[in-house]
Image 1 (cartoon, helix red, strand yellow):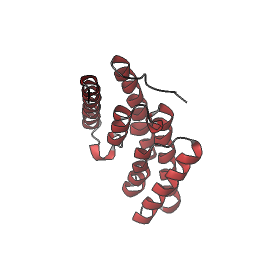
Image 2: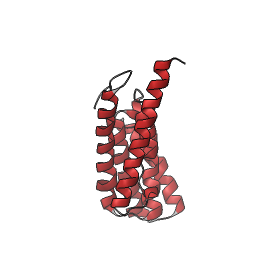
Image 3: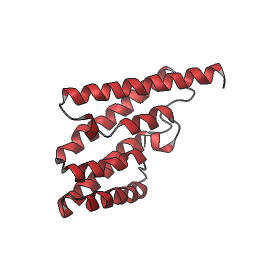
Image 4: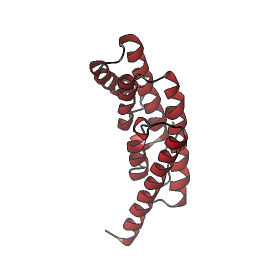
Amino acid sequence: MTGQTVLLWGWRGLGAALAVGGLEAAAALGETPVSLIPFVTSIAVVMGMPEADPAQPRAVMGGHLVSSLVGFAMLTVFGSSPLCAALAVGLSLVAMRLTGTMHPPAGIDPLLIVAEGLSPLFILVPVAAGSAILCLFALAWHRLFSDSPWPKRWI
């Protein structure tokens, strides 16, 4: 491993740590348990593998939105139960694949929505706002120091 590679990975790790710290601060300000904010694994993907398809803005924002919509549809039709939560996760993977928004970390969204019986406002905050903020943070962070520009594409 070269010194440049170590520096790059250190930079990515620092970015991820700062993003998670920001997430924790936002959760505290919004009085939302951090366990209900589904972005830690998204941060790991976007900061640690910025070149990967699931790390691109379309996948991050689209995946979280599509998965959340599936979760709310399942919750509305079938109510909150462990079986419904499991089915919602499976359906969200199919929906992300069909819409070209595959972002595996977004699979937690329908689980949280159904298991916790969350309000539809969850789709605005934290999902829509959080995924957009994550993409803006990643854009700025990767522009400061990166081996390749991020994103590869927006849509």
